[in-house]
Image 1 (tube, rainbow, N blue to C red):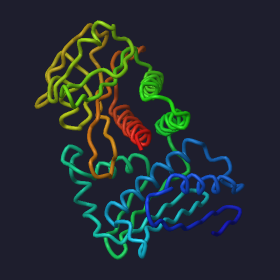
Image 2 (image 1 turned 60 degrees about the horizontal axis):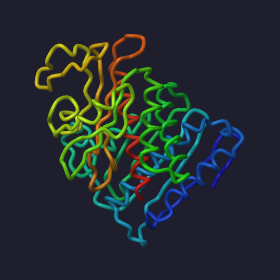
Image 3 (image 1 turned 180 degrees about the vertical axis):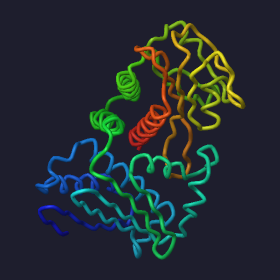
Image 4 (image 1 turned 90 degrees about the horizontal axis):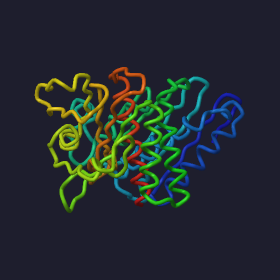
Length: 312
């Protein structure tokens, strides 16, 4: 390890995923003890933690857990940026080809690349011996993106307190409702037994409406988003989007709403869309924007990561 007044660098190796989160947490705490980096916001540290965990998980996915060639992690903090390097000795994958694919095209893995590109200022990958993933985070971020990391940290606190799942769902929705200043919101989870999306928690909807909601994959807006794993922004609910679902009016106050998929286990085998998050009726009457859709998509992904950790 090397420490100076304005620089921190440390390298670690991992033979397996066992104890991974504990070691990464310890590393970031050590970074925060360096005087120059002691004021890094908790949200930024949470961002780095999520990126490292996803990157190392991906390294073991492609590189296996051969103790003779462990995965390697390097974290270097400089005054204007933090760089994370993760190396493995597996077969690797075609990075540029993966980036050109739409989220709905991914099957077993890959959506995590899109998530990482939203969380970091630069994401690079070199396939070789070894494969190398490089994540760069500048030390100045828009406040709203920090909100997404704050959500992940909030849910992690609930997990550490051994709170039940429904408590995490409520925390998730309350956080989103407050940040986007909306009157109505719902988080739907897919029920494998009935093959329907059902409301796990909601705000601004009557219990009568909630009890009747049972959406099939591909049906309506929520079913479309669930089936395609693609977020949707609608700013005129009275018109049908070409090639998309037909919005249905249910007494909403505005014609603008967003719907995003909640995707579990990014960059892991067996990932799946577990549900859909819907928001409508901003309290100030304004429409949702493309930037807000992007932010909400990141929040949903981080919530899914927290729910995954809860199930480990």
